[in-house]
Length: 151
Image (cartoon, rainbow, N blue to C red):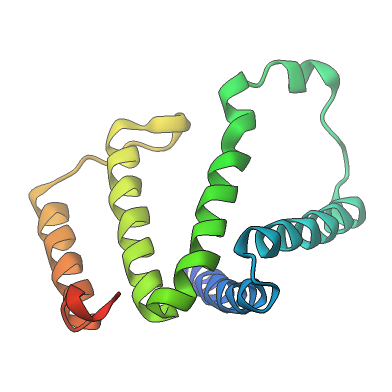
């Protein structure tokens, strides 16, 4: 099915645009943390609006109580990740920052898939996957012209 990969590519493009825009907002405000808070405020508003329009049924209290406590703290990681994007893009450039960020995402996703973290489907790490990781690291080095040019 081509629709899911196409949507994933569009989502990645949207993240690049929003990160670039909000990084610029952080520069203009002289505060990337404030830009992060503003981005999350708008994201929360539009997510709630979308949910109210499209959600058929909200979870019941028993469902909410059954959720493991640690899952409620994902927002901390979101704030760190997104805030780091807004801080680093003006310093590194969006291409360099995104290439390093995506490598971190992909490497951790491969490890998470190998172990089935958070009840994800298990996908073992194979020699082919390891070769792919090395190719990605080489590609990131080529994209950035050597790490000396990133800072």
